[in-house]
Image (tube, rainbow, N blue to C red; front, side, top):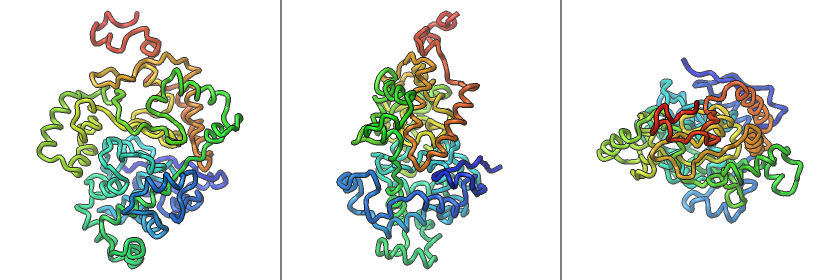
Length: 429
């Protein structure tokens, strides 16, 4: 049975009550998503997006794929076009839905023929500021990232790039748009180029937090202000999630094992299996398929680097608009930001490859509430209605369901490895 999700309002509060019915795979219909997109006031490609310095923009945009209105218009059309998929049911916007924070708000994404992958869909918001793409960094650019889902067998399922281009090549509008944008007929490389050009306009960096750091002391609540202090201090979030003018999205763009997959996977066995498999075929397409179709997905960055230090490591996600992108972690296993903080508070899940910076934090319940309050201030003003709805829903759930909370570990009453080393003798009475 195809997933049908509860639609949440996005963007302007005035339109929040007019959610459209779900499309295939639970996404908002493409036409309705485009209408939502129009209301967001994004750059058309003629100028850098708002809040992106022109000098920074020039350094981000590749010289061989400069952003122009023609390329953005073409990329936007492709982003919403399900004809790029083998069965005509999946577009980029199916898993990166405008009405859901440019994600699908599911633990893992669904592709053609109702197939489920193994990874949570990262948002395409602010993706231009990421140094590598995908949760394991297997794509070096937005251009490379945009093409891989099209030929992944469980995402969009085209047998190859030629088939993808052929699916739209007969469209007269596309013929004109490709010529205007790139001076060529429809082709796979320019499909990726155009989608990347469009995605570089998806900039959402205008949040209450920005007003606060600009000097408006009342832009965020006292609880959120206390949370920001904890973020930069006791909670140690800033170690991987620095937020500053030169890094506005709050990601170090590095890869860390924080113990998520360690709850249910034998890393050593998976790593040995991966090395044998990758020796036979270690190309980009092969890694892409392993990441989404097999248990080797849990190895994270190791599939790309083959370095033992990267076993179970995933890219630090951005914190911008994090209120809109639940569930969290690479496998979508955490439903609320309270779950995320409980996981970090207890020091993650013990495993041989756990990042050395992960340790119990001894945060109180009040401090966790303050940190969550701060993270919700990172929601762009154009999404405030949905952000408020998400806060209410997550807070309600957290009052009764906290599956990752372990106060004994968080407060260091027991040590993370005590149960494994000492058995029942290491458990608190």
